[in-house]
Length: 332
Image (tube, rainbow, N blue to C red; front, side, top):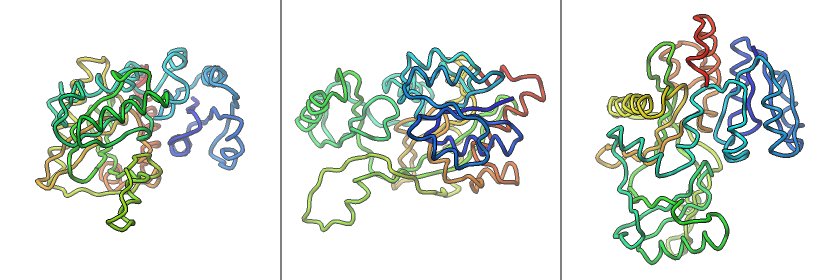
């Protein structure tokens, strides 16, 4: 069995973990990045491409393989091309269209009775600070803050003029919750029938995280492009409510997007000064913040008592499924 992925995002962790679990590995890399990935001995096979159509051919060329998706997959290749992947994909490929649509994404959280920020359907209704977000996994690019409906309108017009969006209906306008960001990483195992917490991270964003270094009299509008990740550990008293959210979310996806959540996902949250957890977004696959924990997070050790990155956890789930002749339960 071969485990493959697209060269980007969390691919090194995915393939390093696969090798630790005894799998042969393969990577689909753009020619411009191939030399970098050839530096790592745990990558056994390479397929190099020059355009997105060739990338899909590369993914499908690896026979007897399982392809592991991550956040760059749809952003780089687009939904039409991803739909042409014919090899088994780890996880639920039916979730991809939900992740690509901010409104459908939030509906899954709302149906799970998870506390979320108030959403404004029309910029005319904005009466408090908001954040305006683009669809897809853009790493925060194009997001902006606004205090009034006039600022929202100006920001949306700038996005339309720049070509970053084609229609304002693609956007989501959310109440800006004051608190600290904490991205809670989970893994749902269909084989073991349990939700595991695999880590917590904070996104390191430019330039909003750099503004604190400026004197108070210098005003610069913040941007939210993710450049890195910082590890975090939550107060233990927060975890029961977060687990409750995660389990509700797993149940909702099973009802609405069968077979539901498989493997890693992330509840991207703000923790307020009252220690309420407000979830403003989810990721339905491995997130780049898990790259902090190649040797395992403080939480993954609690389950396995050995180094367990999320990349390795994916490969462990595939191994467990193969041992039980249940590979179809973790792939689509």
